[in-house]
Length: 376
Image (cartoon, rainbow, N blue to C red; front, side, top):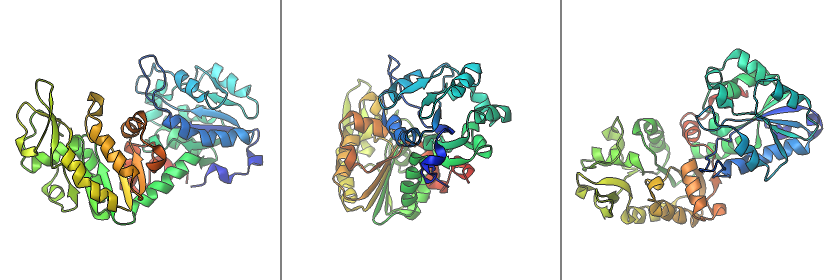
């Protein structure tokens, strides 16, 4: 995998460079970008190409609604660069804008999800049209690199292709996580245990401790014989060999929300039928504290509780412990990072912030991703 900064700047001047960026960001009710992490992480590659005199054409998607546009994303990018947004992707307006570009200019085309069926199917004609806009292709969308889509794996077959600076950094840091220094700790949250099970099993063979939090911890507690009330659980429960693995750390106390909407901390055995587990508890944080302090490598993906319902205090407590650690750290998952940013956790002490959630976990499971393989 070659990185675009291996190409001398002189060879980029005047070239049309298609940058597949990972700018699938959250918007507030007014349609403004909430989380700037992915915007900021995209800047180094764009800046390198702009400064080299390339004509930078940004391809990206946003959300799942094909009616969403990249206009708010372009507005956010304008805080860092002069960006021209074109409300077209395949048509004459887009082609005319590309043909009119001057060296060093930046153009953002419309949401790829407006043609999601073609994008998802890696449609040949769709891919050909996208590729015709550029002379060089750069993949800087690590967060989407687990998807074998046209803009991810199709275009690299048609153009000279390189990794962007962000993709290079993601791979470098996550490669360390594949074979971590010890003691190593993995903290994994989220829902749907069946989707996390392969990664957790892998971590149990490579890490000294694997802590489960979030909704998947409910599944572990259930297999351990504890009641989970009306808590969210997965369709498929974890196997006993996972639950009983001595490296696995599960909650020793939980925060529950009762039917009257009041929150209480309880032992797992005391969860009642009307209780909903919404977070871990303080004793679980205390149990993790020495493990975090002793670790030399920490990877974390997923909040500890239902942050969207306001249960954030124990996620933030874990984050504070991690900032005090001297370990190498990789933190992923947009929900986790956005929450930490919103609450003023010192980012420089959190280690490497990955833009990938699902892509991060799949890379850690397989050691590569379809779009990385496509770069050769």
